[in-house]
Length: 388
Image (cartoon, rainbow, N blue to C red; front, side, top):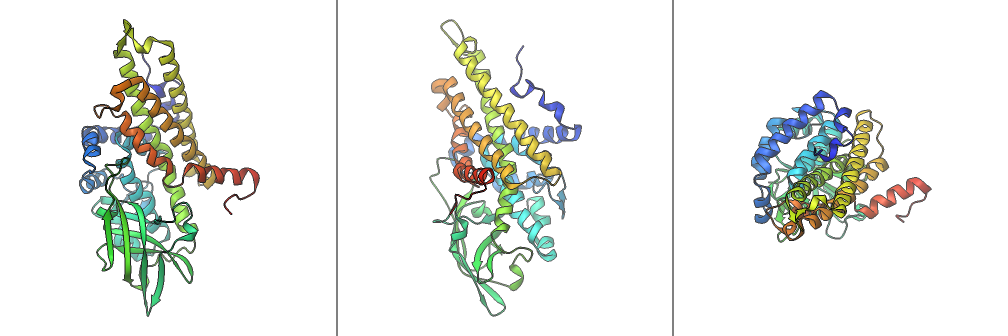
């Protein structure tokens, strides 16, 4: 009798009925709306982001771990389980939800004024408005302290000038949370995308996260009123805390891609015959499958532990770095190993394996490269910073 990979140690017993019910709803939505089309979206380099956002909003997925303003107020664990199911469909779909809820909405929810929250969060929760998060620049990814985007005062207004790069959702967004350096330090701004001087240029010819809408955000003397500033934060702790929030969902989501590939490899190994028997009956293939199932379960237990800490209000940034580093790295290794079991069929778009592997190449380095997370962990272990 075959056992699904996560059933080996009965991880379901660690969840409440409510958590399992939320997962079931999201899984069915992915089965209905995402999985049948994911390969086509990837090949075409485009997905119907606005339509998906509205459907996700109906289920309460957007900003689901936030409270008030139409947000569901779900637990961090329930949100993480949802990210896993979304990324089992495609990493680009999970990125749409993650950037919307854990970066753009979270920034406004945590640091915004009551007016900013009331203006944007309800429509973002329903998916009627899509947000993006402008931090990374063409020359400054891992080193946001060196950002060149500037905000300067002009009477009672602000003028923003600069360029942000690799901004998920930018080409389809209605609002951007943009981080810029001012005389007062790093400030966050809520920028409607129809403001004069704002341009979003879609990045083409990607080989990874092809379904995701990714853009360059150009700010050419964008004039904003004084109340566009996020009033409750100054300095890099603002954007970095948003990244910590989003990385929790990534640690769960990457496991979804790995699980999808492992299920595919298991089905293939049982059905595919060589030398007169299923390849799943050979020792080398079983060793691969056992090792992958082991890493998938370890990653799941790690994500669940971090989620429980988050729900208790006790999670620390370096703990999130541990989860993001380990789970994405191991998920990528799993997808690559699954490709070897499928052989030449592993590169076919008829199977999801190489699509997931290609997507995880981006997940490995966005919102903190592996090296950055290693240094965060190393600093915590030694008390010494290797960043300067």
